[in-house]
Length: 518
Ligand SMILES: Cc1cc2nc3c(=O)[nH]c(=O)nc-3n(C[C@H](O)[C@H](O)[C@H](O)COP(=O)(O)O)c2cc1C
Ligand code: SF4
Image (spheres, rainbow, N blue to C red):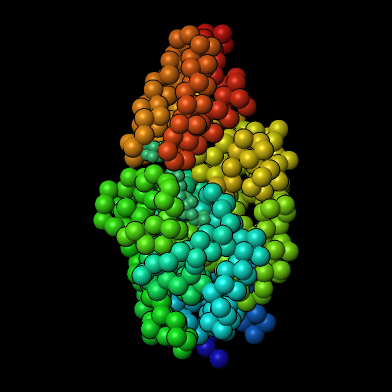
């Protein structure tokens, strides 16, 4: 048996030197006259262990990491090809605590298989959901998704089944499935990991959505900063066409469905669904007023499902194992699992898929291992640039849509950014306003003008000019933005700003005054 060595080709692992490690392994094989099959898999998501190399042995897979090119020679000396012990030896990947504690449903194959091998996908449970879907009525597929309790993972948490039902029930000469892979939130990389590590699960999810709603064409809108994901998705679509998964007869059924990959132009607001539709149509990425909902009048005026990558990639397992299986995980109205992306100043950064319900403290302290600097955690921003900053006092909040909303926060796309006690929350509040000013599409006044006035007012607080009066002014401005903005860019920027003011008032003492007092 030729040994198989897995070296991630995921862009996070590449950034950490995976290609150099691959070259060193190939050179060492050649020098030693040994043979091995090298598979460039995705990442399993423990970025603190990347590049994580795995070798298939008779007793199962053995992982090593983080591997440097300079480790390779001694790894071979230690018997890499048979899983021999070395200082980078991590043992069986499933037993590594970061993975052992997870519930991997959507990410079950990510980092495990060759992302472009349809056979490997099939052998590891892939296409079972689609096989069931082609034998069902569209209404039954929609009911299955509705009953699973799946809610959109892009940020708004809208029930996926209800969205699909609206498209199914709306007449149209053409309908579309649009996958939102713009993934603009800070600290998020779940969509990228799926597209690079298990692209067929997304393709399968989109095909199921097409059959469920009567759509025959799908688009994946991927941010331009993800060239590796674009390449993987393009190649995977081609393989899926060759394999009869896409095309005129999906898995030999009478259903037609095909997918086109499109690349965004680099605007955060193009992740907002209506702006994304404009961009897909070749127009400027400006937000459209709703109604009409995209489900009624979406891409090119046709009924359109727009879903996030993770929402769509979660559908195959729901179809395969049934709605009750999926719904059994989670808490309250947050059902199933959620891939939490832990980033920022944190020791164990990476993707952690788990049922809803872990507390923020468990995620940051136990799983994340606290800060990378070793200093105390001061704040955690949950939900991307529009999410609130949570202080330690709120670390008992369970990861659940309603629990976070109840604490004036949001889960968003489940990215969390950790900050240590050197973070200046006034600067973070200013950054939120500045981000909104830069990224605003300009359609409505509270966001376009309000964000710029917000930056100026926070600068006045910082300079010690009538601080109390200006804090009140920012609060008033945030209320106007929250209730008067057309979309969540202007509407949610108040979350990071107000949470910084409310939870960290000491940072809003004028800097000039604070410095004088010291
Ligand atoms: C400013 C802004 C940016 C957004 N960016 C994204 C994004 O990058 N990816 C995403 O899936 N949803 C994003 N959304 C949410 C989408 O508008 C939409 O709710 C989502 O694509 C629907 O899919 P889902 O129901 O599967 O979550 C954004 C929303 C706003 C207001
Ligand atoms: S809130 Fe901002 S981004 Fe959204 S529509 Fe208004 S101007 Fe555009």
